[in-house]
Image (cartoon, rainbow, N blue to C red):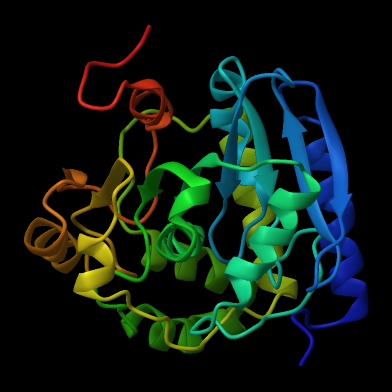
Amino acid sequence: MTIYTSDEGARVLAREYTALLDRWPVPAERLHVPTRQGSTFVLACGPEDAAPLVLLHGSGANAAMWADDVALWARHFRVYAVDVIGEPGLSAPVRPELHSDAHALWLDDVLDVLHVERAAFVGTSLGGLLALDYAIRRPQRVDRLALRCPCGIGRQKRGVLVAALFVLPFGDWGRRTMLRLALGPAPTPVPPTAEERAFGEYVLLIHQHFRPRRERLPVVTDGDLAGLEMPVQVTIGGRDRLIDSHGTRRRLQRAAPRVSVTFLPEVGHLLRDQTRPALDFLLAEEGGPPRA
C-alpha cells in the first residue's frame, strides 16, 4: 500500500518540503544515497573533517524537523540529517519490517556510502527506536546515543490513535486536534520560532496526504539495554501521550543504570529547548564534564 493518500498529495508534500529545505539555516549538501531499500535522502552540513553525527527523525516527519537544532550542532560535527525510509521525506517510500534487521542493514548502506565508519546518533520517537536498534545490532559503529522520547522501551500508548479515527475526518480542525492530543502539553510558554511554526504547518499538511504507520512497535529487551556500552542520554516527557515515559524511566533505571535519563514531568511528546543539552552530552568526555 502506498504511504500517501494520492500521487498529487505526494507531489504537494515534496514541493513544500523542498521549500522548507530552502530555509535550512546552514549551507548543506543534498545527497541521494543508494541503498538496498532504494534511494535515501540525506542533508549533509558542517565541517567535512568534523566527527560525524547522524540525525533520525520521528514518524510522520522528515529532516526538516532539525532546523532549530542544526545551526549549533553543525559548528562541531559533520551532520547527516537522514530522511527515514517509509516516511514523508525524499527517501524511498518502503516500510521493511521493524521487528527485523532491515533498518540496521539500510543504515549500514547509508553510512558506507557516506564513508562513515562510526558516528554519534540523535534520534527522536521512531527515529530513537531506529537509533537504539542500530546501537544494539552495530555497537562498533555507534559512538554515543542521544534519544528524545524514544519508542521501543516503554509501552506504546494506543488511545491517541483511537481518538484520531474520530477527529481526523473533520478536516483541518481534526488534524490540529489530533496533533494536540498526540503531542500533549507545550513544553514551555515561549512562543514557537519561525522554523517551528513553518514545520508545524507542514506537519498538518503531512497528515492530510500521508498514511502513518499503524503497526505495534518492537520493544527492546532488558538484556539489550543492559548491554549498551556507549554513552547514552535519554530525554522524556512525563505527560507523553504516545509512549509510557514513566515505564521508560523505570526500565532504564532497572536494566541500564548507566544510561543518563532526563525526565521532564510537565512535558509531552514534543521536546523543545533540548539543542544545548544534547550538544553538551555529545561533546562530553566519557566520565567527565562537557567540553567547551
